[in-house]
Amino acid sequence: MTNLENTNSSSALQLGPLQLKELFDILWKGKISIIISACVFFAVAAIYALNQPDQFKSSASMSVVMMGSASNTVKTTVSFAGLSLETKGVKGPRYINTLRSRGFFRHLIDIDEDFLPALVLPVLGLAEYDKKSEKLIYDPDVYDVVNKKWLIEKPHYLDSYDVYMGGMFSGYHQERGIIDVSFTHISPVAAKEMVESIIFEADQMLRTLDLKESADSLAYLINAIPNTQQLAIRGVMNDMIMNQLETQMMASIGPTYIIQVVDPPFVPIYSFAPNRRFIALSAGLAGLAFGIVFVLLRHLRKQAIEQASRS
Image 1 (cartoon, rainbow, N blue to C red):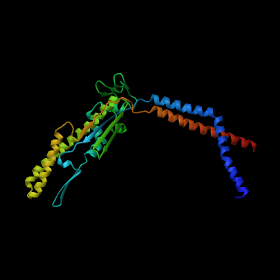
Image 2 (image 1 turned 60 degrees about the vertical axis):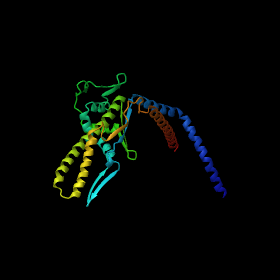
Image 3 (image 1 turned 90 degrees about the horizontal axis):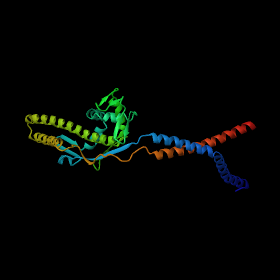
Image 4 (image 1 turned 30 degrees about the vertical axis):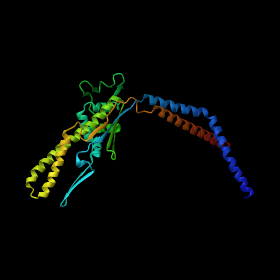
């Protein structure tokens, strides 16, 4: 290595520490601005977080009820002479899709009159939770609690559906056959009641639909059997009738049809959100970074002005 290369290497090694020392000197001189920036960001975020209402989360877990021998497997197939009848175990996904459907939400707010005002008005800032009475207090100019009557135009269910999906979570664990449903709300009592309404009304809705469908299927099969000459086809149709009768039986007995509650909804004690400490600390760090960038840019601008005046 030549003397020139050694000199360049030594200069490069000395350049880093010198620049780092200069950077620290710049930041130290501007420490007041950096501290003020961090404090302002922290204070604004703290005030914002403190003004946000507590959000409580209630949840429930249900297992999927299996029906008889035909439901002990994921798929039951009956085949004869090219005829294939396939029944898939899709109760869990069907239940989840029902919870998330607009049709079910419209059915839910029609059945439960308290659901829609408790869902929409807190989001609009027209309701608040009273911890002493453990009830939602609505704006008296907007909703009449006693008569359950809207004093303004009732929110459209399609607009309210977005609020519903924002507060409700549902998931299906196929391997365990477990369905999880939760709801987040400013009222812990309302969160629990909403989870109850959602899980049981969805189950009841599917029960009613399956009862009607199986009744129509039974009527068709019973009328079609006398007109069927082949004994083998009659046997298949008898099996189909047995399946429909099983559906009728399971839908007519027990408090629930598709689900069996494993962990019922509860009234939460502690708030789920907002995380006020995280919000304030994150804002403080952001303010610190902003202050550092501001001090450096101010120093570079000052240097640029000095060089321009010299030239």
